[in-house]
Amino acid sequence: MRRSLIPAVAALVLCAACGTPADPAPAAVTCESGPRTSLATSGDTEWRHPDRSFYAPADQDVPNGASLEHLLTLDNALIVQYSPQLPQPSIDALRDWAAMQTATVAVPGPADPVIRATLASTELTCDGLDVAQLTTLAGSRTTGQVTEHGDS
Image 1 (cartoon, helix red, strand yellow):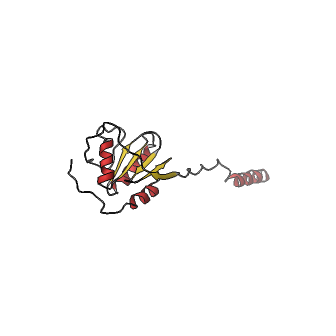
Image 2 (spheres, rainbow, N blue to C red; image 1 turned 120 degrees about the vertical axis):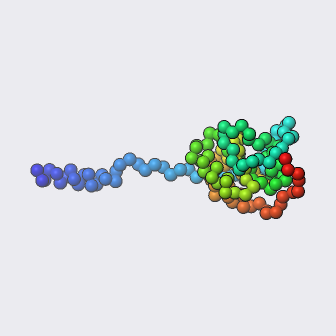
Image 3 (cartoon, rainbow, N blue to C red; image 1 turned 180 degrees about the vertical axis):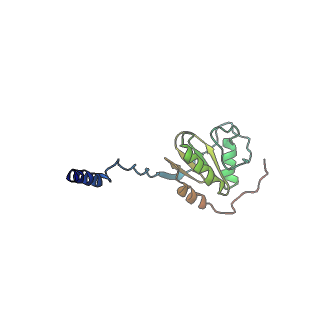
């Protein structure tokens, strides 16, 4: 009986590492940088300063295009538009990241691109969330570049 168990035990030991293949590593996020395009649409004339740094897809009080343009051109802000189809863990990570930034507002945007991060002169579009690349973009702003203007 002992001899018949030895091959079986040896097979189990050898196959212990067989299992199922490991989950593939998540694909790297690809981003492209270029000149920014306007966030306002025709008819967007009234603006207001947002009252928080993150807006969820279901929020009703998301800043309009005129408010976002105002933030870009007069407040030296970073605007991050994200796809509402972004997985919830990524939305949560973006919320946490935005809360730790200065002059940054994240709002739901169109489905494509997944992420569109905009400064006054630069736009970064990404096929997923990469907070390291967003942090680099946010850090590229020149501090103290806010234009005096009235609050609304």
